[in-house]
Image 1 (cartoon, rainbow, N blue to C red):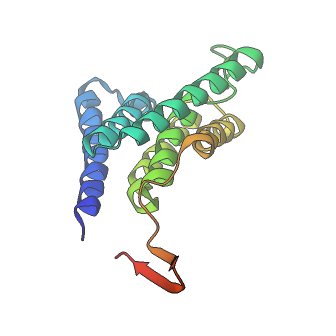
Image 2 (image 1 turned 30 degrees about the vertical axis):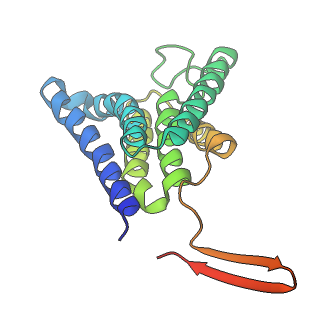
Amino acid sequence: MTMKHIRHIIASCIVLLFTCSALKAQETSISSANTNQKIGDVIIFALPLSTLGAAYIIGDKKGAWQFTKGFIITSAVTYGLKLSIDKERPDMSNHNSFPSGHTSTTFHSAGFIHSRYGFTYSIPAYLLAGFTAASRIDSKKHDIYDVLAGAAIGLGSNLLFTSEYQKKHMELTFNSDKGDYLIGFNYNF
């Protein structure tokens, strides 16, 4: 296991630890009637902050910038649609139902981790994003279409800006010099 792998594992644990700590801090103020909604309200801030923080901790400034650009696009598209589409929330509290901002934000974070560092490291983030999406439906703030659109926006922004952090495991090289030819194959474990 290389130092790079160890840093990725540590960063993934920091994301999960920070999010769980934030949830635990909110535990005393959560009533049983709206527990899921409150937890989703914490995750919407904790997940992006811990994702960005983890990128800085492992020294991935390029990744942090990619995350920031994607976050700006996710937010702009989400709130642009909320303002232009007049869809009433299921609880009838206002007309900002479509798409789910909580879902787009958390799925942007999970998708960034997946695209940049690999699926294995993104599993905790996807679980938190999925919980947040379910909490929005459970609290009657959104329906399934709002949540699906939010997830699509969050994941889609990563397609625009996020590139892989690690190099490919296999590499084929070719060199020629004055009639000599060299073919090389590298495999990184």
